[in-house]
Length: 328
Image 1: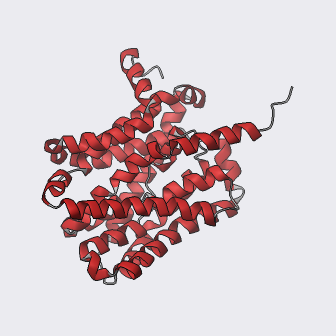
Image 2: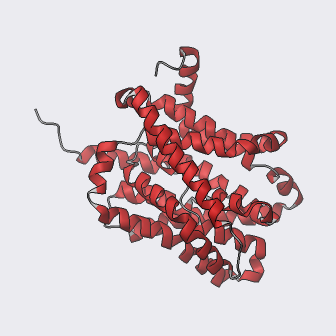
Image 3: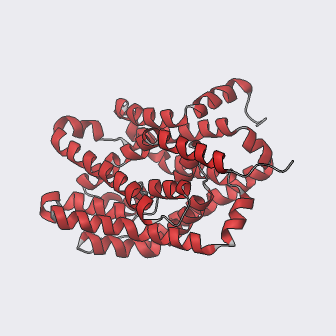
């Protein structure tokens, strides 16, 4: 990675080696620096674009081509990531009741269920040394389907018409995902696959830094809400962590036809949703409690990689132990 001078590259490698810990720390940095949240918010799109570019540049193209030749796994995984969250949300609404949750949280839950998986999930899989190729395919596919599917799901789950600017959503997704794909391909062509692989820790470090900046912007108003309504915030935090846990559990149980490592990364993506895309489409019409739900939903996104790291380590060890020996 010759484009980075050594004084910069070495700290990036250090951050990358502690990637999951950096994810966990960054959410608390965002809370501790509320005065910078408003200034950082315009950079949200840029940080996501940069993170996606790095992720796409690191995709194993040979593994991706082999996977595309077997579309059944992609179709099954994509169908699960689209259908499972709405079913979970409807079950919660049936048990808890819409009135008990309030309209703002009901809409937040609907946005969680209707949103595509979080765009950083393949990069998290890479940090945990788990195979990201299937996840890259289904995250890309479900993100591109979001303009057609998400508005219908939001209206269905929320129980009332929610105005979404579908054309604006299509344009933002096309620019974000398509632009990052093109930039990732250019980066791969410039640096080469082997050099990118050799500097894995430095790319991980760049990803952590971009997500730390995103955390600062997403935490706008959260600290004030914690001080003013601690019980309410605690309840929403319990809900979003519960959604994450249910995503893991249901995926591990329902997708038993897939290898354990793939079930694991799909479980992560099932619980961690890109609510920010739909919040951006709603814009100023987003209710205050709905935006708070979106902000608090970042906590499991940032903390889960560190929480599940021991389980991921055991999966990697199991894969290594059953991997075929190289030919003599």
